[in-house]
Amino acid sequence: MFTDKANKIFQDVIEKYHVINTVDQPFENPYTKDNLIEHLLYRKCWIDTVQWHYEDIIRDPNIDPVAALKLKRQIDASNQDRTDMVEYIDSYFLEKYKNVTPKQDATINTESPAWGIDRLSILALKIYHMDEEATRTDASDAHRAACQKKLDVLLEQRIDLSTAIDTLLSDIEKGDKYMKVYKQMKMYNDDELNPVLRSQK
Image (cartoon, rainbow, N blue to C red; front, side, top):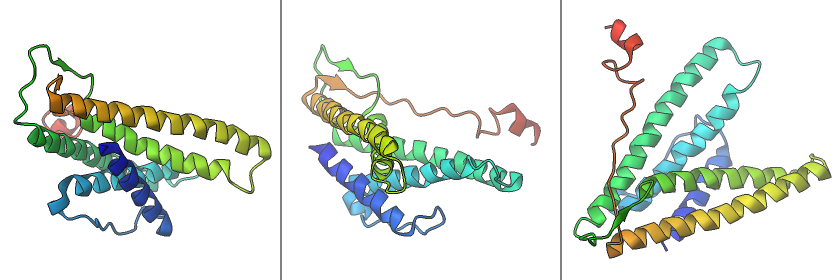
C-alpha cells in the first residue's frame, strides 16, 4: 500500500529531525529524484516538521518582537513551500495515472491525493509529539493518561486516513475516480494581488 511507504518515510523524517532538534539544521534528502515520490514525501514531511517547531517557538510569550516578525516571515515562506510540495506530489500522480480513462460514472473526490497525504504528514507529527507527552517522566500520571487517550485516537485516525488515501489511489487507477487539481491561488504573497504589496511597487 502507498501509505505504508509514506508513513515509514514520515517517521524517518521526524526521528531524523529530532536527533539535532533545531529548526536551523541543514536538510539532506536521502532520496534522489530518481526515486521521485520518496524524494517528494521526505521533503514534504521535513517542511512540516520544521514548521511545527516554528509554530512552537513563535508562541513564546516572551519572544522578542523583531525575532517574532522574522519568524512569521519564515512561517509564511514555509507555508508556500508546503503548498508547492503538495502540488508537486499531485503532479506525480497526474503523470502516473495519465493513461487511465475514467469510467463514464467516475466521480471526483473532495480533495486530491496529495492534500490527503499532507494531512497524513501532519498526523505523523501529532502522533510523535503526543507519544512524547504520554511517556514524559516529569509529567503527572493524569497528564500521561489523558495524552495516551489522545494518542490512541490519533493512531486510529492514521489507520482511517491511510485507508482512505489508498482507496482513493486505487479508485483513480481503476477509473472509478478521477483527479482534477486546482493550483492554489494564494493572494497574500503576490505583489499584484495583495494590495499592501502592490502599493509598495
